[in-house]
Length: 419
Image 1 (tube, one colour):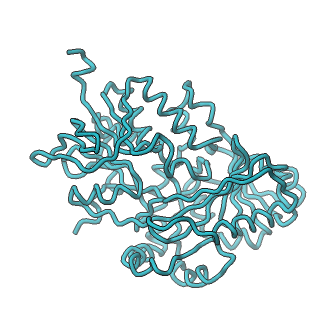
Image 2: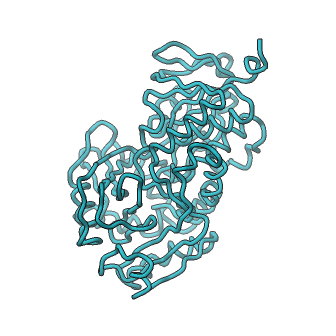
Image 3: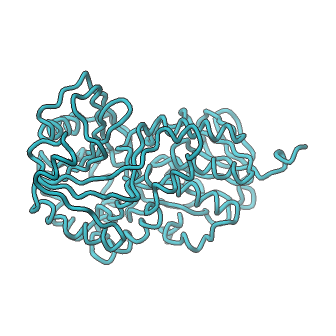
């Protein structure tokens, strides 16, 4: 028996950014690791996003006043929030808990915890991917917020105040300086708030995760394509992960399957209240013009990002559950907003995508061990999964190896909703 055979064995369930990152850090620590997913790495939610390493995105959606504003948002055909009304009765318990956090005290608490996970996102991804084949997809860059005018910017003063309090100070540009900084933007944009440091983007999130999976395999990790059906516990301790290809014996496991983590967590006796935010993106291939860096368009609440295969615009949200297919209205709104932003834009064709972002009621991911089972959680990042994935994987690996203090992650513990 070799020393590798005697080393601890961890099964990581889910080959998105959180799972692959955890696998790499565990393999680097000398663990045997098996990465299991029903799809190939990077094919799920980690594929479809704006690709931004958005360290400043510490402020949750549930800011003060959301309860009062929400009905108007849903009824406004130009606001990037959609609801399949048939799904509303099922999501009411989640929605009630979610909106209960829309106050100043909870918003500040959530922001401070999110800063811990994403505040050093660029550096964490550089540690994860640096000097490997995955580094080709990682680009340090500005992250800018585009506004029609100063009035529109000042309407978000609460959010910007919290960002500043958490260490993120923007550079403000107006008038001719906007055209000089970002010539691709149309005349409807009169102001930019630019984050110059600690940000970046991924030129292809899906290919990035696939490259990281190559890094993982190069470290001796094993990739298995299978559907996980459950976990076998003996005396409340993980012994194997059950798949449709047979059981995989292990000493520990990481649950990193996004919104699909809910039923597996339920099998282990914990409730993780999450709802799917159905996110959309459109890739404009061979565009005649493209933003130079990731750009959040305030009026449309979407981000335009330069990618290796065109310009990706992502960010429309729809509540409609896991079962139904994509809707047309979110895509139509996104296309209309892009046309307003770049009226002269031409392109060869478009690629559309819809996926599921896991949204906990308190906007905080689940990172920690379930009791003393040896099963660890790494999911629930809502809009910041790619941003926080590198560090989340590192934190979970540290919990398993004993290098990470569990108490420091108390705000993210997976059993925090147990009565």
